Length: 415
Picture 1 (cartoon, helix red, strand yellow):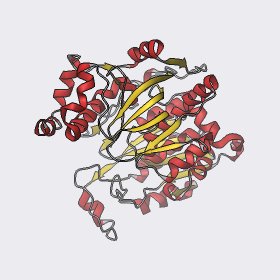
Picture 2 (cartoon, helix red, strand yellow):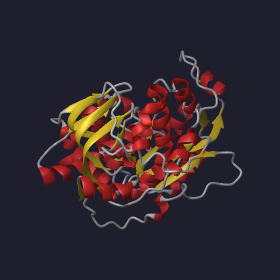
Picture 3 (cartoon, one colour):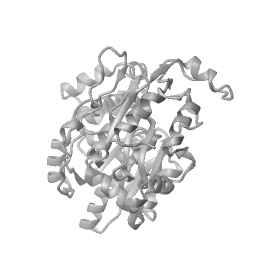
């Protein structure tokens, strides 16, 4: 059985087939709504009026990329402006190191992993990890409908999960996990109760700071470390968030409160600098000095955001008139901006996340394609680093500063 489990870990098609044949039972979002109405409690989230057009949130980056560039273009799941809901489920299991929720009758809840349109990949990965560790017995509840919690399960009486997503990623955790607390606000309004917040095993300083800034610093927390399983008597489960005007506005208001900058104070021109962390080589700008020299006459200052607190970053981006940088998590902070022009730099990898986020929060956005460079050239421009860059994984780029300043001028950002 163990050998079969290890073999299945390398076979995502097997799990895809089991789900398609309904041999593993799952609850997508419509089914979760129905289940929560019958077996738990559910409340819709507020839906403030918005004039944001949903169409750009469903497809690739705009304007359309030129053909024949040899780019690696990502097209993530479509975003929706559906306000979603929060529900309370009783007697559930939590399975795996990024736990998936299993109901008392053995159904796997897809919204505990990701938005419904994108969750089968995560579902397959979760099942592969579970079978690799526990064998096919880990999926017994999905086959039989019997409630099975693997040995060693932790018990949490009342909980809300803030554990999924790319747990080291500032972007994914802030916009897909932290914003679940907006749904918990609604739950508290109806029940007067606050669940224990289940945090990732790789919790960080900025996670704890953000939880405090949005008003949950006094909440009880539980740190989900290592491959483990759990049992929850009452699970508060929001529908899996994507950025919306309502969720971004909630985040901005909670973090900044009454400290928002006046319009005349929004004159900061920000160049997001890449850090010196373990992945320093990813998307490194090999002509960084030339880039900074070209932007200095335009009033840009370079910032290493990882050296700042979250509140310092929020205040900085609140004062922003323009934001320039290579694609990376620092652009998440545009949720704190009002009216700032955003210019994102890409090398070989092109991702539309911040194009979509800028559209949601109402910021003018452009991107600039830059010349990709090899990992060897990245290493040659950073001889002080001990670790070599990983070959073939989104290494570095060279910015055409003439094209950059021209793009900024077209956005109204000049001397």
